Image 1 (tube, one colour):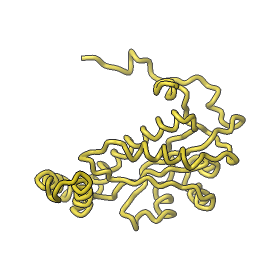
Image 2 (cartoon, helix red, strand yellow; image 1 turned 60 degrees about the vertical axis):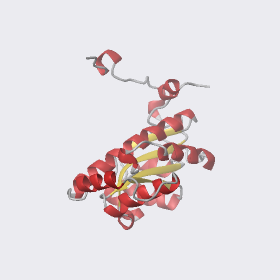
Image 3 (tube, one colour; image 1 turned 180 degrees about the vertical axis):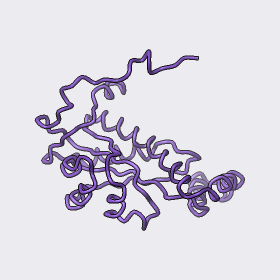
Image 4 (cartoon, helix red, strand yellow; image 1 turned 90 degrees about the horizontal axis):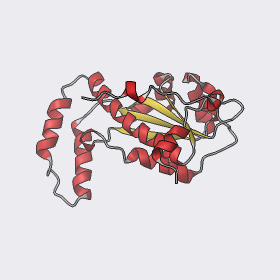
Length: 211
């Protein structure tokens, strides 16, 4: 079995996908599960992962993509969409579910959720969203790692029109705003120009600071 570091050394941001090759539902489920298990601030999981496989929807989303071919040709697109803001109902729903699952009385963590509400509820929506959006990147990283372990190609992307994505998927109806995308599929070796190039990262001596 390959190690995590070997899998990360293998992966790269694929620049072209083979539209004839599809990722199995079993493997998509594993990638999504890795994202679901990601840690989040206060355990609130303030985002959703939207899985797009339908070709018609992918074609519509491509209008807002920096690399529309990737959008159209990838087997699946995972869209990480964060809460547009924190609300008392959203916080309570998460903690009610948590106490129910753990067999604890509802309100067991009221003193803590009251603190969260005091911090977040009076903040501007934009500041709330900046916080919820940051949580999605932890999940994105774990999804990338899980896909690499499965030897499934991926491309994380911020190069897209959030407005287009949000409108096509009507995310406002769910109180969500798109943050990032993950193209998932199998590379087209003839068009994926990055695949033959050396993986380059800043040297460890420059990357790490010791105190």
